[in-house]
Length: 298
Image 1 (spheres, rainbow, N blue to C red):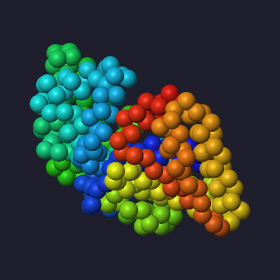
Image 2: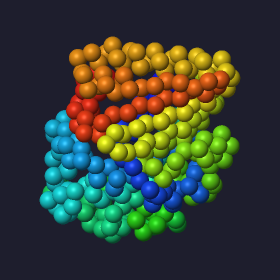
Image 3: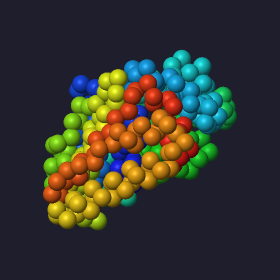
Image 4: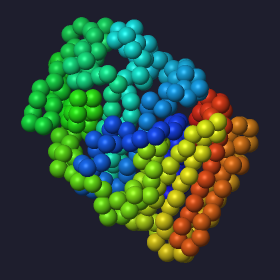
């Protein structure tokens, strides 16, 4: 359970607010694949609008030179920043974290995306070329000299779904025949604010917990709210203790990181009966310093 909290928390601290469902979620919400247990949405356009965004990108580039070089190459070759190509992303995953990633693009369709990719590939290796071939409702992508195939499903002119697995044809077929989330997942999804820039809904039905949902709101202070539902009041009490212990451990491990300490000190664990609630906040301006600190501590 603590791992799930950490994943949702990390996602929440790097996105900002929005006011409507994203393109990717709008395209996916009626096609959720059977077996999906985790739904996560992020508004990349909103993220780029935060004052800290450029500093976070600079940090990522400094941490991974290959990523930095790729970002620079895409910009110089295709005339646009790679992050600017994406408007939003939605993930639909199983408990094993396999499933689909649905991407909304800004001013990009299949033709433009292939053109940009091949211009970049030409600089890396002129012999390499990426091609796409229609296969029913899916598109089969292949690279010159490579036997592996990448499958994609264009849900609209600027929304592409890909699988998290190498051969994702079956996963994408399952998405195309999917339906709106129902059952436990549908119940938690109904409580999540999918028009927020950062949101998650998930069900576990194991380890004493049914599932939960989380949402982020933006302002000068980013605020994260996470709600978990235990199977019984006893499970809820146990969960509150586990989360509190996790926060305490975070405080101990971040003693030399004052900005990170402030985040852990802001965490409020609550709830009653089977419910576990977690609320946290962090100044948006502190985000560029928090990410390196979090990376060092954890």
